[in-house]
Length: 127
Image (cartoon, rainbow, N blue to C red):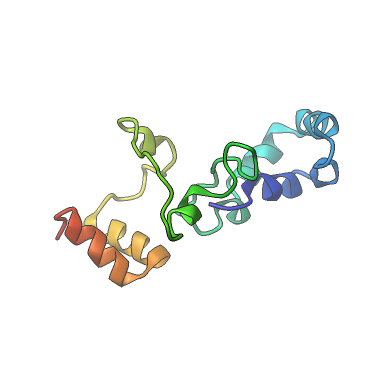
């Protein structure tokens, strides 16, 4: 997770208005739909994170940093985690095969094989 809002603004030519929310909103409203869709699907938006560009808004009074970065700090801040049933399928390309190998290689490409092995072992996934 990273700077998706800034990347999006750059891709739709609205980055000149980031300091003025009224002008930024007006810029977004004037961006053609095909430009928005192209920007959302771009490599710059995915940042090599499983092609998922969406992340929480940070540097606010409620959330000072990306949660995934904060969890790597010592001491680990208090946190709660959870999912909605099937929510993940809204964000992935379901035309791709869902295999053990694909999941393993995808996670290993992000966090390395040692951590991937640990995660898969913890959840009892072996094939």
